Amino acid sequence: MEFVQQNIYLVVIAILSGAMLLVTSLRRPGGSNALTPTEATLLINREDALVLDVREVAEYVNGHVPESRNIPAGQLEERAGELDKFKNSPLILVCQSGARSSGACSRLAKLGFTRVHNLAGGIGAWSQAGLPLKKGSKK
Image 1 (cartoon, rainbow, N blue to C red):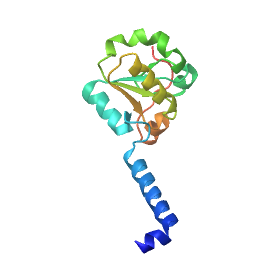
Image 2 (image 1 turned 135 degrees about the horizontal axis):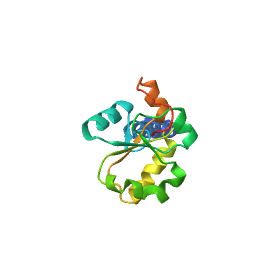
Image 3 (image 1 turned 60 degrees about the vertical axis):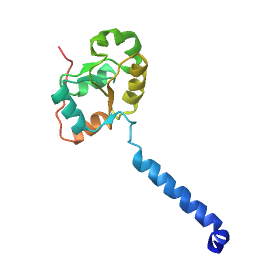
């Protein structure tokens, strides 16, 4: 007890750093709905998940997940009606890094979509995992 009283600052720092380490190790990057490229591939193959690319059209044309749809994040609310039949199906949202798609996941969840996921790391993580990208617009 005497050690704790004499070194209270060191004890407090040790407790705080341990708590911060625990919180960061338990929290998934990208939120609780984040998927790795491998998890996303499994969801696409096993449950026929729809991949929704929320980047701008020019970014989408430069390279996107095959068979994905493009609805830019800024148009998501006004074009959400196009996705009504997928309200209870798995949706995987993709952007360049995972930041825009994370926000889009929250907006779709508020609109009643129940199985919305974010691709952690975005297209960068997808291509780094060696998964294919398709160039050009979907016809």
